[in-house]
Image (cartoon, rainbow, N blue to C red; front, side):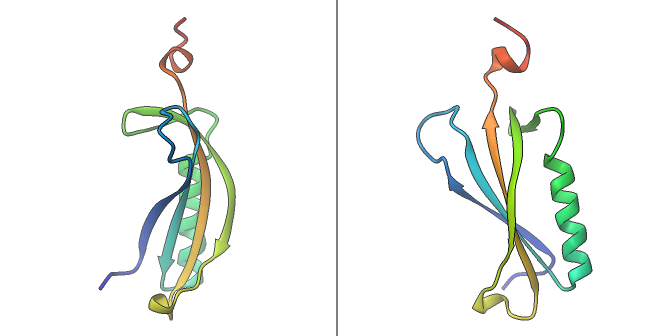
Length: 100
């Protein structure tokens, strides 16, 4: 059992052992209205689409919006859902802070 609105995320690609490899993460957003879905999508894009790197879990990363698509699932009937994909590329410390 789950409540709406909710946001889930999954790592889609880039789960190799390479620490600095880019990763594609999909954020799945579920709401009760189309207006709420549009608002949530705008907020998520505003959070990650920035001119400066974002910091997640102590790691600075560039975030690049890839695409979005409507989601459908048998267990989520009656709700509005959309998946947003971003590529996150971790910055090495010397690049992030100008160290050589």
